[in-house]
Amino acid sequence: MTLSFLLSCTRPLTASVLLGLALSGCQSKSNATADAATTADSAAAPDATPAGVISTASISKYLQAVSSDEMQGRKPFTVGEERSTKYLADQFKQLGLQTGPDGSYFQAVPMVEITGTPSATMQIKGSGQNLSFNYKTDFVAFTQREQPQVPVTNSPLVFAGYGVVAPEYKWDDYAGLDVKGKTVVVLVNDPGNAGNDTTFFNGKAMTYYGRWTYKYEEAARHGAAGVLIVHDTKPAAYPWSVVLSGATSPKLRAQTPNKGADKCALEGWLTMDAAKKLFQAAGQNYDQLYAAANKPGFRPRPLGDLTLTASIANKLRRQTSRNVLAVLPGTTRANEYIVYSAHWDHFGVGKAIAGDSIYNGAVDDGTGLAALLSIAEAFQKAPQKPARSIVFLAVTGEEQGLLGSAYYAQHPPYPLNKTVADLNMDMLWPYGEMKDLTVIGYGQSELEDYARAAAKEQDRYVLPDQTPETGMFYRSDHFNFAHVGVPSLYASGGFESRTRGKEYIAQQRQNYTTNMYHKPADQFDPSWDLSGIAQDAQLYFRVGQRLAGETTFPQWRAGSEFKGARDKSMAGK
Image (cartoon, rainbow, N blue to C red; front, side, top):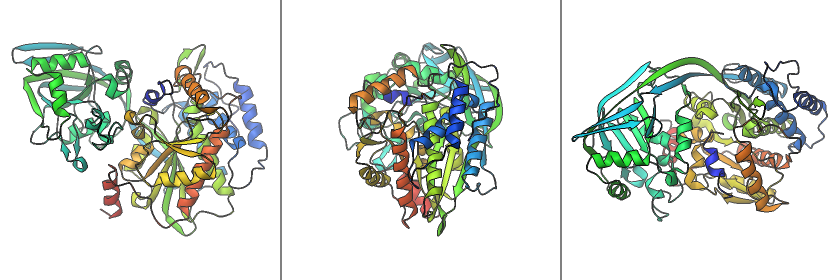
């Protein structure tokens, strides 16, 4: 899962494995030989589990394989990608699943790695002012334009509130203002977050309009040269250090025919202190602008005659990664598709911590991959084959910004208006069976009704997202399906253990977040209780079975920001 997963968890709460492959000299404290032997034994052992029932043995078999040291942390463009994607394709083949429509288990995903170095200072001039903001302490900047040098020179500065254009909320922060060639300064999150009115936008629960990625996209649609988001820890739900760590590392992007020419030349963030200095230089007051931006009828305004000058030097590296996909054809409605998704990538081999340099990614997202393969196995074992086709999709580049799922959504092997739903699995907790099923983005679509029915079969209750203000619905691969209108489900047990209660799970999650998340310590532990992962996988299997047996399509709820895209897609436009 992407770095932003951490934001919702830092609150108190709140078959054979490739035995002959070398480790390329990397060191790990996990017992690779023992793990491999255990995996091989479990792969060879007969599974007496009834057809259609997902077992912990199945979960364990796949989880140990995909998170073993041999997979080298599953980073794109490394031997870890070669090994992990080959393993997944081999499993799909062994399960008797068909290839994608092009005759391959792989979908090529062209990417570019951009290592950007911004100018040491950002110069603000005008109104007799001459401000110099320092890189990292006052601002961060990056670009999606694939050019060696990306300059922004004397670009007029404009304040555009939240940078939101939301017709369903009758809101337009760009109304009446031409921002072509200008640099737009916007607030983080969305207008609903600032007050206590639950009917305004989505209240404290972030909408897609609150995501920083949306703000960059919207500014580009209006022709802006640059866009800077004002960082505020509370509505952002993360400190400046998180912005800094994400902004200063090389970025993988999808290759585009125009090499990012339709993106803003400069994207970035300002610290709150820098933003206040900027507004003051323009003869404006931050608190007054903030208050105005949260009222209906707000109109954007120039920041005096201030202009911005900055530049970014880029190093570019182009390569091709790959999604892995397979299909179980439907019996009577084979041209309609249900997609199960999980991401295969993690962080590879990196800085050693406690002598271990392999970032195995067992929970993130080896658990999702194990569930994906176990669900595929369950469908194959089930006595009744699905009427609709089932697509099993393991995507690349999630940790780099949901890149593989975005590519799939923009280049779908199967028509989007024939895609019934996406059922996404990302980070399932290895702490035993749960009483809850927490639905991220609760209230978005009818898929939660399907999830509720399957949860009832397991004597579980449905729990809405417990930190909706962090916008978790927009931070895993299901979002890219939602973005193009496909109803998407992202749910798992995560807050109440069936036998040990809520406090136990809170402690386990906090320990994972502090000591294991995005670290080498996220590796398979034989003491894990995998019954909760099997439980979640079984629930997803039952949801897919029900969807596969129907002739109707689940719908977005009224008011969902994704309903319009689905309506347009289903109309054949």
